[in-house]
Image 1 (tube, rainbow, N blue to C red):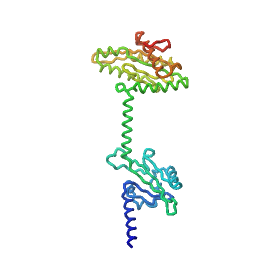
Image 2 (image 1 turned 135 degrees about the horizontal axis):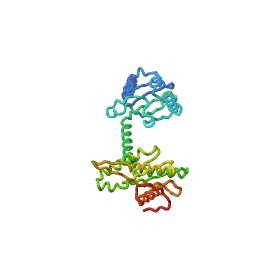
Image 3 (image 1 turned 180 degrees about the vertical axis):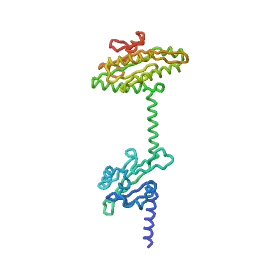
Image 4 (image 1 turned 135 degrees about the vertical axis):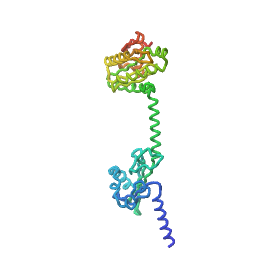
Length: 324
């Protein structure tokens, strides 16, 4: 009698633990009918264990993709080995609301789950157990860190004054385009712009007005470009554009259009009107360029040639040009 009482007591304690443990427990039979639905599941679903008992899982929880879940579970039934799902692969198995105040920014509970085989006394697996872990805090913290890292990456890749990509990012684009042109032979061009009189503007009006000029130039450049063109603030008073799938003639027309637009701009400071001119060097892709640096250097040589000729003009690169 005493031993029997102890066994009954043990079972009672075990059931009490199962109902109150801070993870979800669901036991399914071979037909995916629910045999156990603990207190965690009741608390988050609003469905009592009594009402869940003998209900088909997919009828009770239609958010669970049946084909996917059956594939995972059949491996557990047949191979007698556990399997897992993690929130990075699938945010949740059971669509529960997130009631946790600290992580209230997400509407749904993130979950990791384990599916384990339950062997009978004959070593057959007629039931499986789903263990549901609430990992909302972990997921939200991970997403916050990822978002912060992305924001930092974006911050480091964009020039803060002009909001154009910076030189490091742009040179990576030129490197990829150099490789593409080398393989395909398709034309593309690099254009580098220099504001001829920015030093004089800074000297006469201060760097704050100089910054306004740079911002005005970048805005005009952005409005003039095609969707496939890749601009950049190269540094100081230099801007550059990678003109994808553009031959030398079309690139020269683009550069002249930019030059004429900028020449017609007036930046106003109080009662003063500040005009802008620019010099532009253009280099079409050439197989003699061993890498993206050679290509950019060629455009820079063309720019220097334009400056030496008095500025406010566009020059196309020619191999006879020398640097400086």
